[in-house]
Length: 180
Image (tube, rainbow, N blue to C red):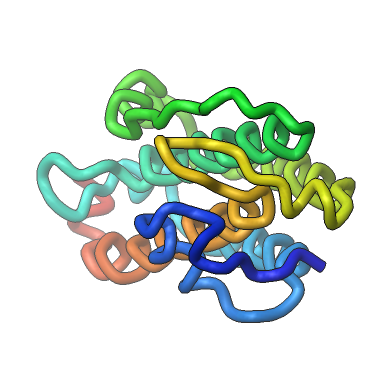
């Protein structure tokens, strides 16, 4: 079990993600969350994958690709810090990544499959870590972060984007917008 991090284990910005995750077995939640996200995305057709809830906002495909990119980056940070690497790790520009990714040229099924693979690899990583490795701290995005905080941030970040999908994207999906 990966204990919930306290506020000293991550920058204040990340509290909005950690706080979204209920108490409990984080690894189990990450697996269940994956199933829920894949079911939600699997219920959309390809035309809906290009939907943006407002001009200048990411499409559903771009948002899903962002979740994948961010999870990879958070897990990379967790790997390095868990192995005792104290090299400060830089931030990333999510908008530049989204623009360069070309997610709208991919299918929702392809993105969902990639998310599944990334999550399964990250579950294996976090399952392999002992308490000492999970408690290690390093520097990322200019602040201190623990390995266990990164695991909770992954879960909360996905919850954040699934909530946006439900609240802002899905209500705008009608047969007219799906056909556009």
